[in-house]
Length: 347
Ligand SMILES: Nc1ncnc2c1ncn2[C@@H]1O[C@H](COP(=O)(O)OP(=O)(O)O)[C@@H](O)[C@H]1O
Ligand code: SF4
Ligand SMILES: [Mg+2]
Image 1: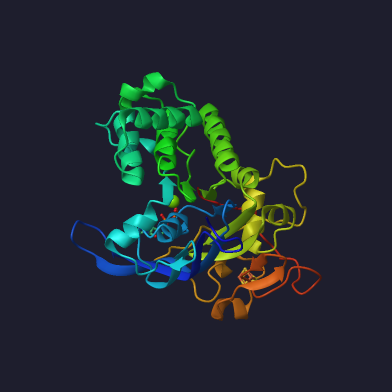
Image 2: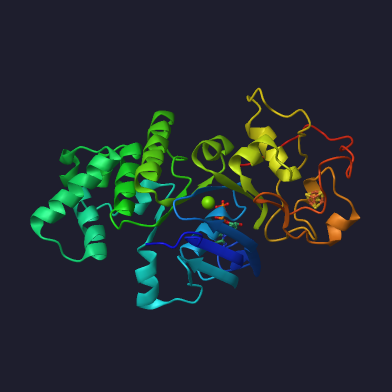
């Protein structure tokens, strides 16, 4: 049992930098450090669904991998179910990891191509429960297939015999086989066709409701997160710039980046706020992050303070945290001047 009030998963000011070779030609070029995650804090309660959104390359998957301790942070702490697991290793870490699972963007590359569905699920169940008797094992596998909407005839087939949506159902079944307390779905429908996307989202909603498992839902699509998650965190160049209950965030976004992201994605929404604005410029490279607030080269409100001082997270409402020097209520900052309509949000 999990104690009430204790998060199932938490990152406390966690950072991760990677070493990357920059320059042309194999073996040539300079080694540079990429700060993929920069003092990010996120908290997921038992049974809660939290969305993590932001442009491609902003560090969402890296933060997900840190929460599962598939990576070791450069700095900060990772907690799981009341324990600091930042420095866990070996068997101790593997035992913890079984309680957390990841559903990847590309199910084809996350499934063993030589394993039948039965072998994939048997391996996962055995890792969790030890060796089961034949009948018990069969019943367990049948229940998993039923949960993810696959027929029993799927058992003897290999991944290449399934469509993309069906492969994602197999990887969801495999994740559920270990009865996890926490699941990360990293862009789970991005690689699927439109019809399969809807079906897989419905399935994840059913899993969430019926199994009460906590979710981190990584996406670059705000609509999906709005639908699936009670809370949303917005990431920009390694930093979490805004976190709020989804209802608040989508009704009243505060951070200039959140507002711009919404404008780019919700332009078909009739409730769209009229004071949202379009952004100039491309996202900067994480190899050369801007000084101060990472968003300042694209922010129409930026001033000298933004260029030199890193904004710290500030609580501005119930569970609403913003990483910006300014409030955007009242007239603390005037509306931006001369903004070109050249929004480029990559995905
Ligand atoms: N293993 C790695 N080695 C070097 N750089 C990495 C590695 N993983 C991620 N990065 C870099 O870290 C940044 C964040 O990547 P990622 O977490 O995959 O972002 P997102 O999931 O938001 O697209 C990117 O610049 C990416 O190139
Ligand atoms: S700190 Fe400054 S540059 Fe950054 S988002 Fe806020 S106003 Fe814009
Ligand atoms: Mg990613």
